[in-house]
Length: 527
Image 1 (tube, one colour):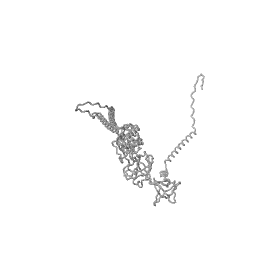
Image 2 (cartoon, one colour):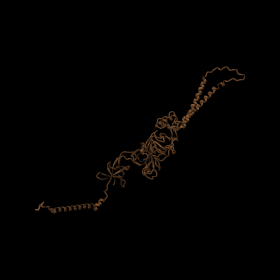
Image 3 (cartoon, helix red, strand yellow):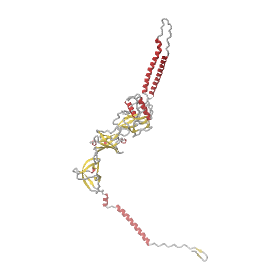
Image 4 (cartoon, one colour):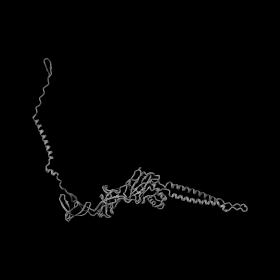
């Protein structure tokens, strides 16, 4: 507000004095006091609960640390066929393994390198199949009992030639009119057809024999030309007209007249020349036949792999295309796999030929059934087949090396922690009894080299019986056997039983007269 004085001066008003603070209410103070009391009470309550969880009475501690109450372990009563058996281990391996060591087929090959591979491990090899190519040389398989030990070529004779003829005939390449075991033109034609079927050049006996044939043929051609010329001359002389003899002039006394022999001398000389030329022609034709008989298509020993039984299985390939060949390139097995069980003397008791067996490869789940063929005498040698090396300087004889461990694929790898020759993983076992098994079906290749579970079924399967675990059987001081049955309410009752055959941890039981035990009941096996 502006005040005007008599002198018309304007006077500005001063600031107004501050208002006094409001007075505190008594109700607000009471509310704050109640809030503080409530917070304090909450903190005290929380602290009390925490302390209560930490502080335990002796009774509570004893209850918490006491062992749990005893409980029963039960197993169901079942009805099944129970066959007594013996469980052991067995080794699967090939009876014979062939290790192929390539060699050079000619002096022109100075180093051996893998130039082609036609197979891989696990492949099945059939007759006439190409296995590999080494430095341009094919390597193929043919059926035959005797390994190749020499080159087979025109003029060769013997059982190995007959082996080749039979193998080629099985592939549709007959040997024509050749005698069995004699390498003639028919066998040479069969060899040529086989190599052409492989898509490979036909090997021959070489330049030396071919040069001998060429030289002999030129001699025969020359002889024939000579015989033809002499024959033509003789014919020309015989066709000339015979003129009457002119009158002979009077010769002085004492001078002889020409004889008839001197007149016929040219004709006699021509006949002699013709006979000599024909004789030479016959000799040179015989030489040409001999040269031709040893010249032509051949089968180098380095090319062919004779196996007693085909198909065979490739167990190892020790090389790749372009790699040098040193030692065994391929390993094959022929004739299937064999299996030998390893039983302790105690296990072998009661095992006889003809008993049924089951083979189980635990890692693959493969199961094969068979029968016991033979129970051998105690030995410490691990089960293994023979190894036969084909080709190379270190080739073994056809009989192989008995008992040699098989290369390429392990023939008898023991299970973890098992010593070779020690049955059932018992390290340090001095000996075992080998059991020869005859499988009902051929053993699959996946089982080769595996240590498998062998179960010998000592009795034929019969009718189902009431069966409980062996642990369920109790025997009192009097020798009476019983089981303890537990009903759904947990009540226990003793059932006297008579035990029967046992197998696989189970035992057949027959309730005593008046007692009852049925499939599905629960029996005590432990606490």
